[in-house]
Image (cartoon, rainbow, N blue to C red; front, top):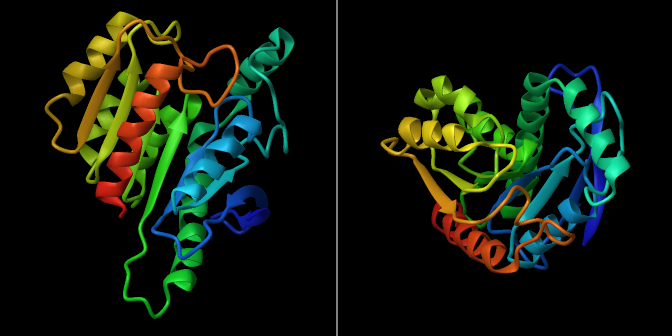
Amino acid sequence: MTKTIQIETLDGNGTFDAYVAEPAGTPKAAIVVIQEIFGVNAGIRSKCDSLAAAGYLALAPDLFWPIAPGIQLDPDVPDEMQQALGLMGKFNQDAGIRDIEATIRTARGLLNDALAGTGLVSKVGVVGYCLGGRLAFMTAARTDVDASVGYYGVGIDGLLREAHAIARPVLLHVPEEDHFVDKAAQAAMHAGLDDHPKVTLYDYPGEDHGFATEFGDRRSDAAAEQADARTGAFFAEHLG
Protein backbone atom coordinates (compact mmCIF):
# COMPACT_ATOMS: atom_id res chain seq x y z
CA MET A 1 0.00 0.00 0.00
CA THR A 2 1.20 3.51 -0.75
CA LYS A 3 0.24 6.84 0.75
CA THR A 4 1.50 10.33 1.43
CA ILE A 5 2.08 11.43 5.01
CA GLN A 6 3.16 14.69 6.58
CA ILE A 7 6.30 14.88 8.69
CA GLU A 8 6.98 17.62 11.22
CA THR A 9 10.30 19.42 10.97
CA LEU A 10 12.77 19.03 13.84
CA ASP A 11 12.13 22.58 15.02
CA GLY A 12 8.36 22.07 14.93
CA ASN A 13 7.84 25.10 12.67
CA GLY A 14 6.72 23.29 9.54
CA THR A 15 5.69 20.07 7.86
CA PHE A 16 6.58 18.39 4.60
CA ASP A 17 5.21 15.49 2.56
CA ALA A 18 6.72 12.04 2.31
CA TYR A 19 5.71 9.26 -0.03
CA VAL A 20 5.34 5.98 1.87
CA ALA A 21 5.28 2.44 0.49
CA GLU A 22 4.34 -0.28 2.97
CA PRO A 23 5.18 -3.98 2.69
CA ALA A 24 2.45 -6.61 2.67
CA GLY A 25 3.44 -7.98 6.07
CA THR A 26 5.42 -6.83 9.08
CA PRO A 27 8.33 -4.68 7.84
CA LYS A 28 11.86 -6.00 8.28
CA ALA A 29 13.16 -2.45 8.69
CA ALA A 30 12.62 1.01 7.24
CA ILE A 31 14.56 2.72 4.46
CA VAL A 32 14.45 6.43 3.68
CA VAL A 33 14.85 7.02 -0.06
CA ILE A 34 16.62 10.32 -0.75
CA GLN A 35 15.64 12.04 -3.97
CA GLU A 36 17.71 13.26 -6.88
CA ILE A 37 17.46 16.89 -7.98
CA PHE A 38 14.22 15.96 -9.76
CA GLY A 39 12.02 15.71 -6.66
CA VAL A 40 9.98 12.73 -5.51
CA ASN A 41 9.17 11.78 -9.07
CA ALA A 42 7.98 8.50 -10.57
CA GLY A 43 11.46 6.99 -10.43
CA ILE A 44 11.92 7.68 -6.71
CA ARG A 45 8.44 6.40 -5.94
CA SER A 46 9.26 3.24 -7.91
CA LYS A 47 12.39 2.78 -5.77
CA CYS A 48 10.15 2.92 -2.69
CA ASP A 49 7.69 0.44 -4.18
CA SER A 50 10.51 -2.02 -4.93
CA LEU A 51 11.82 -1.77 -1.38
CA ALA A 52 8.31 -2.38 -0.02
CA ALA A 53 8.03 -5.46 -2.23
CA ALA A 54 11.28 -6.66 -0.60
CA GLY A 55 9.73 -6.29 2.86
CA TYR A 56 10.83 -2.81 3.90
CA LEU A 57 8.85 0.23 4.95
CA ALA A 58 10.04 2.89 2.49
CA LEU A 59 9.70 6.66 2.85
CA ALA A 60 10.74 9.37 0.37
CA PRO A 61 10.61 12.87 1.88
CA ASP A 62 10.03 15.91 -0.33
CA LEU A 63 13.28 17.70 0.47
CA PHE A 64 12.60 20.54 -1.97
CA TRP A 65 9.49 21.58 -0.05
CA PRO A 66 10.92 24.97 1.03
CA ILE A 67 11.69 26.01 -2.56
CA ALA A 68 9.38 23.96 -4.84
CA PRO A 69 6.96 21.78 -2.87
CA GLY A 70 5.73 18.73 -4.75
CA ILE A 71 8.00 19.29 -7.75
CA GLN A 72 8.44 16.30 -10.08
CA LEU A 73 10.83 16.62 -13.01
CA ASP A 74 11.99 14.36 -15.84
CA PRO A 75 15.78 14.31 -16.40
CA ASP A 76 15.26 13.29 -20.04
CA VAL A 77 13.48 16.59 -20.81
CA PRO A 78 16.15 19.29 -21.33
CA ASP A 79 14.11 22.16 -19.92
CA GLU A 80 13.25 20.13 -16.83
CA MET A 81 16.90 19.16 -16.37
CA GLN A 82 17.81 22.85 -16.36
CA GLN A 83 15.02 23.57 -13.90
CA ALA A 84 16.37 20.82 -11.63
CA LEU A 85 19.90 22.24 -11.76
CA GLY A 86 18.48 25.62 -10.80
CA LEU A 87 16.69 24.12 -7.82
CA MET A 88 19.90 22.43 -6.74
CA GLY A 89 21.53 25.86 -6.56
CA LYS A 90 18.82 27.08 -4.19
CA PHE A 91 18.69 23.98 -1.97
CA ASN A 92 20.00 24.21 1.60
CA GLN A 93 21.74 20.89 2.15
CA ASP A 94 22.16 21.30 5.90
CA ALA A 95 18.42 21.91 6.21
CA GLY A 96 17.88 18.87 4.00
CA ILE A 97 19.82 16.70 6.45
CA ARG A 98 17.61 17.96 9.25
CA ASP A 99 14.54 16.93 7.24
CA ILE A 100 16.08 13.53 6.58
CA GLU A 101 16.69 13.17 10.32
CA ALA A 102 13.06 14.06 10.97
CA THR A 103 12.07 11.37 8.45
CA ILE A 104 14.34 8.83 10.17
CA ARG A 105 12.66 9.61 13.50
CA THR A 106 9.23 9.23 11.93
CA ALA A 107 10.28 5.94 10.36
CA ARG A 108 11.49 4.64 13.73
CA GLY A 109 8.18 5.55 15.29
CA LEU A 110 6.20 3.77 12.59
CA LEU A 111 8.47 0.74 12.89
CA ASN A 112 8.15 0.62 16.66
CA ASP A 113 4.38 0.51 16.25
CA ALA A 114 4.58 -2.20 13.59
CA LEU A 115 7.04 -4.32 15.58
CA ALA A 116 5.34 -3.95 18.98
CA GLY A 117 5.28 -7.30 20.76
CA THR A 118 7.54 -9.04 18.25
CA GLY A 119 10.79 -8.53 20.13
CA LEU A 120 12.42 -7.25 16.93
CA VAL A 121 14.65 -4.18 16.95
CA SER A 122 13.66 -1.33 14.65
CA LYS A 123 16.42 -0.30 12.25
CA VAL A 124 16.42 2.46 9.65
CA GLY A 125 18.61 2.83 6.59
CA VAL A 126 18.91 5.45 3.87
CA VAL A 127 19.58 5.16 0.16
CA GLY A 128 20.14 8.18 -2.05
CA TYR A 129 20.79 9.00 -5.68
CA CYS A 130 22.80 11.89 -7.20
CA LEU A 131 22.14 14.74 -4.74
CA GLY A 132 20.66 12.02 -2.56
CA GLY A 133 23.91 10.04 -2.74
CA ARG A 134 25.76 13.03 -1.32
CA LEU A 135 23.07 13.51 1.33
CA ALA A 136 23.25 9.81 2.25
CA PHE A 137 26.95 10.25 3.04
CA MET A 138 26.18 13.36 5.11
CA THR A 139 23.39 11.49 6.88
CA ALA A 140 25.80 8.71 7.81
CA ALA A 141 28.14 11.26 9.36
CA ARG A 142 25.55 13.42 11.11
CA THR A 143 22.72 11.14 12.31
CA ASP A 144 22.11 7.81 14.06
CA VAL A 145 20.96 6.05 10.88
CA ASP A 146 21.84 2.34 10.93
CA ALA A 147 23.12 1.92 7.34
CA SER A 148 23.56 4.20 4.34
CA VAL A 149 23.88 3.69 0.58
CA GLY A 150 24.80 6.38 -1.94
CA TYR A 151 24.58 6.08 -5.70
CA TYR A 152 26.77 8.47 -7.75
CA GLY A 153 26.96 11.05 -4.98
CA VAL A 154 28.34 14.39 -6.16
CA GLY A 155 31.02 16.26 -4.23
CA ILE A 156 31.74 13.58 -1.64
CA ASP A 157 35.44 14.31 -2.06
CA GLY A 158 34.71 17.68 -0.44
CA LEU A 159 33.06 16.00 2.55
CA LEU A 160 35.89 13.68 3.55
CA ARG A 161 36.58 15.75 6.66
CA GLU A 162 33.33 14.30 8.03
CA ALA A 163 34.32 10.67 7.45
CA HIS A 164 35.68 10.30 10.99
CA ALA A 165 32.11 10.69 12.30
CA ILE A 166 30.79 7.68 10.36
CA ALA A 167 30.14 4.91 12.88
CA ARG A 168 27.77 2.65 10.94
CA PRO A 169 28.06 0.90 7.57
CA VAL A 170 28.13 2.92 4.35
CA LEU A 171 28.10 1.66 0.75
CA LEU A 172 28.93 3.95 -2.19
CA HIS A 173 28.38 3.17 -5.88
CA VAL A 174 30.83 5.11 -8.09
CA PRO A 175 30.45 5.14 -11.90
CA GLU A 176 33.89 5.71 -13.40
CA GLU A 177 32.66 7.91 -16.27
CA ASP A 178 30.45 10.15 -14.12
CA HIS A 179 30.42 13.51 -15.90
CA PHE A 180 29.59 15.22 -12.60
CA VAL A 181 32.39 13.51 -10.62
CA ASP A 182 35.75 13.58 -12.40
CA LYS A 183 38.59 11.08 -12.03
CA ALA A 184 40.45 13.30 -9.54
CA ALA A 185 37.38 13.43 -7.28
CA GLN A 186 36.97 9.67 -7.53
CA ALA A 187 40.64 9.16 -6.64
CA ALA A 188 40.21 11.45 -3.63
CA MET A 189 37.20 9.42 -2.49
CA HIS A 190 39.22 6.21 -2.64
CA ALA A 191 42.21 7.77 -0.90
CA GLY A 192 40.04 9.13 1.88
CA LEU A 193 37.68 6.18 2.34
CA ASP A 194 39.26 2.89 1.24
CA ASP A 195 40.81 2.38 4.68
CA HIS A 196 37.66 3.40 6.57
CA PRO A 197 36.38 0.36 8.48
CA LYS A 198 32.73 1.24 7.87
CA VAL A 199 32.82 2.36 4.23
CA THR A 200 32.78 0.25 1.05
CA LEU A 201 33.14 1.68 -2.46
CA TYR A 202 32.25 -0.13 -5.67
CA ASP A 203 33.43 1.22 -9.02
CA TYR A 204 31.50 0.74 -12.27
CA PRO A 205 33.77 0.96 -15.34
CA GLY A 206 32.24 2.67 -18.34
CA GLU A 207 29.16 3.82 -16.44
CA ASP A 208 27.91 7.41 -16.16
CA HIS A 209 25.89 9.37 -13.65
CA GLY A 210 22.33 8.11 -13.22
CA PHE A 211 23.03 4.57 -14.42
CA ALA A 212 20.73 3.02 -11.79
CA THR A 213 17.69 5.17 -12.43
CA GLU A 214 14.50 3.10 -12.57
CA PHE A 215 13.79 4.07 -16.16
CA GLY A 216 14.75 6.61 -18.80
CA ASP A 217 17.71 7.33 -21.03
CA ARG A 218 20.31 7.26 -18.26
CA ARG A 219 19.66 3.69 -17.14
CA SER A 220 22.25 0.98 -17.79
CA ASP A 221 20.51 -2.32 -17.06
CA ALA A 222 23.42 -4.62 -16.23
CA ALA A 223 25.21 -2.15 -13.97
CA ALA A 224 21.97 -1.08 -12.30
CA GLU A 225 21.05 -4.67 -11.54
CA GLN A 226 24.53 -5.36 -10.14
CA ALA A 227 24.46 -2.24 -7.95
CA ASP A 228 20.93 -2.93 -6.72
CA ALA A 229 21.87 -6.53 -5.86
CA ARG A 230 24.79 -5.23 -3.81
CA THR A 231 22.50 -2.74 -2.10
CA GLY A 232 19.98 -5.46 -1.32
CA ALA A 233 22.65 -7.68 0.23
CA PHE A 234 24.04 -4.73 2.20
CA PHE A 235 20.66 -3.86 3.69
CA ALA A 236 19.90 -7.54 4.41
CA GLU A 237 23.13 -7.76 6.38
CA HIS A 238 22.87 -4.51 8.30
CA LEU A 239 19.12 -3.94 8.66
CA GLY A 240 17.75 -7.47 8.58
